[in-house]
Image (cartoon, rainbow, N blue to C red):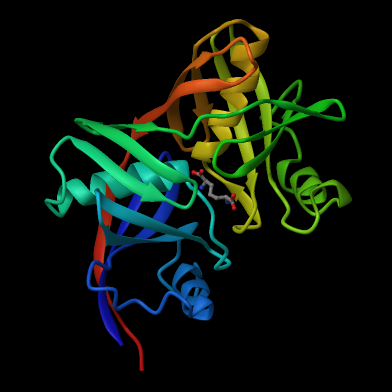
Length: 258
Ligand SMILES: N[C@H](CCC[C@H](N)C(=O)O)C(=O)O
């Protein structure tokens, strides 16, 4: 088998990107997805994204975590929009389908602004919070996220009884200023901390914004900076949610396997 691939990164969350409009990629072969995402024996990435044709949309994005599981991915979607512009599928606006439904996006130079699915409600989870922003997120506020044991505690929550059998992503937040937070994330399906998690920072921004009556929150991650905007409705739901940040192509290559 042989195919071209590209590597993209969005605030340090990195993805193998494949133009699969011919539908040649064996998406059932999860071992191949795992092998490609392996950072020692493969190309290496947090996830793998297929771009496919979709009636009524510019494209469809199929996202795989490094372990082969599927989910919505906010940074991956931003990179998919940048990739579709590179391929000439779109100019500066996109309408595409993902596992959690339809999305729109705007290309603004190096920045991609992604429309996220609306969120029905925030939930309490013990002393913490839970939000589904297209993928599930546990959100914990901590005094100093810089020194917090993200992998150890993140793993225990992700595999804890409360979230069996599917698990959850786990985000740790420390406010930096009135309208800015610092977020670190343990990602389900990567089973490690990632430098940034788009659906995760969106979840954290909704909780922080709701608590502080904001509709725009800046987020600092280990991999870079993002901005989340939203409107909070009186019924506790959140609409017009956008996730904005950079997305860059970093490599192009060919994969050959016997
Ligand atoms: N690991 C997540 C999906 C990717 C989320 C993250 N990469 C993002 O940018 O949203 C999950 O299994 O729900």
